[in-house]
Amino acid sequence: MKKISTQLCLLFLTLMLPFAVQAQRLFDQQDPLPQQYFENRYLGNPALAGADTGLSLSMGYRKAWKESADAPVSFSLTGDYQLLRTLGVGLTVFNDQAGPLKQTRVAMSYAYHTPLNEEGTEFLHIGASVSLDNKRVESLKPGTPAEHVLKGYEGYKNAIGADLGI
Figure 1: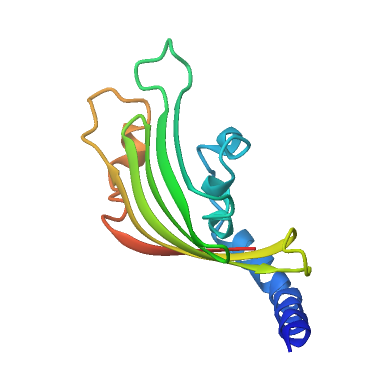
Figure 2 (figure 1 turned 135 degrees about the horizontal axis):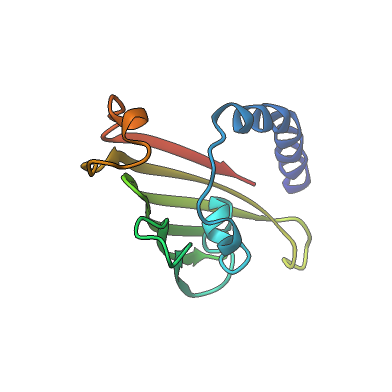
């Protein structure tokens, strides 16, 4: 029975992969923390919440172009915990600021880790996150180079997002 459920899960994931890739292309945006994914696997993939035993906390900070007054600044704080050997939860708080553009995101994740072998050393990680996103334009200073471009842009105040990971 366990072998059949694992095979069905793998079949489902194989069939869903092309749709997930296409959805990623449709909604792809520039991600401000790409290099920090190497240090914090959970930041890039909600399926890795609780993949390791115990509580894992991580904080990241990046400021580009130190000489510039409105340089992009990114901050992230993540925590994930393995509830059971097969269940994990996580929380991400993220803030990004690039000139007058601001983004704040809070996400909660749930992950299921199904063993792929009898020894329990290899796992298939499946996870989902639900997030509250806030994107906005702070007050523009007169003379800002992109002032005429951003004048009518309001961004979106609050939006609910979702991420899936394997």
